[in-house]
Amino acid sequence: MTRVATPTRVATPARDATKRTTRCRWLTRPRDDDARRRVATNAGNGRFIVGGNWKCNGTRASVKTLIEELNAGELRDVDVVVAPPFLFLDEATETLKAPYEVAAQNCWVEPGLVDPTHHYDSDTGAFTGEVSAEMLEDLRIPWVILGHSERRNLFNESNEFVGKKVAHARFHGLSVIVCVGETLEERESGKTMDVIFAQLKAVATEIDDKEHSSWGSQVVIAYEPIWAIGTGKVATPEQVQDVHAKIRQWLADNVSEEVAKATRIQYGGSVNAGNCSELARLSDIDGFLVGGASLKGDDFVKICNTSAVHYKAIGRKPRSGSVVTYSFDEDGELLETK
Ligand code: PGA
Image 1 (cartoon, rainbow, N blue to C red):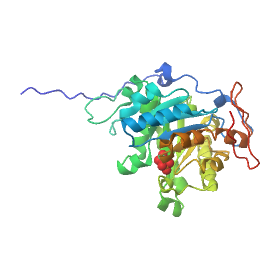
Image 2 (image 1 turned 60 degrees about the vertical axis):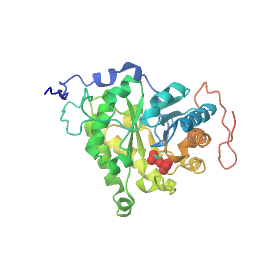
Image 3 (image 1 turned 135 degrees about the vertical axis):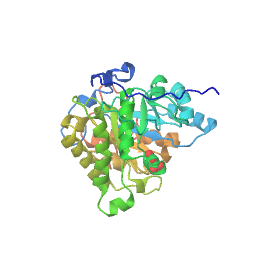
């Protein structure tokens, strides 16, 4: 009987750490000017970023309609990343107009891989049903969401596994939205920050390097309390600001001040067109990761445009060259101006 050889994974030899972020040049362009601009608040200095996580939703027809709605919206000084299911990534890439960018909702790394150099050079092979970061790189998908609580909980993804995935994706030049967050039980027993710090540490362990080049504007942290996801129960502004400020402090203490400033921290969990303005005013919210409401084009565009509310709250002027003028009513609500 002829036996078909199973491809084997060979750990990559050590290489210069700086090569990790230069390997995929088309994906590693500077992402925004704001990342280098310091502001006189505790806030980060990154550009507001909103992600739309479509999860396992969509038909050909509904995806076409949603993309049309998104393309019809006008976005104001904001990075926007939408994450369709794998099957629709190509269509979204082809049909969404700038500034929309596209993310995969997951990618693969071999969990048992021992690779002390953390370079994860190749992960294609006999992994039925999986999609590798190499494939995303090949298809020019610029972003990937990793460590979503649905993957951690439904598919038993450990902190360490998520950390490896982040490092692997970064090696392939992908920008990453990495999700962290606690269960209700963990919050009620006072363990929220312990849980989140352990999740962050697993990422930092894998992508740490001398230049911290794997962090900054290309690793976004999404704080998503599990009890708020898909439940309609949004965290209070105080709860969100408290956790975000502590995440930023953790980055300052454990990675670097520069990374703490440049890292965008999103809030996710029942964000919708009605509650986004109040949350966007918080100084340490640098954007949102939106599930259910990202499936409604108009609502999602409105959520994205709360970037203006955020910049006003932290005293940052809109970018020069912006064609949009911002104005606000007496309550600080953004007015629909163009
Ligand atoms: P939700 O999902 O907005 O539907 O709560 C957020 C997420 O899971 O990313």
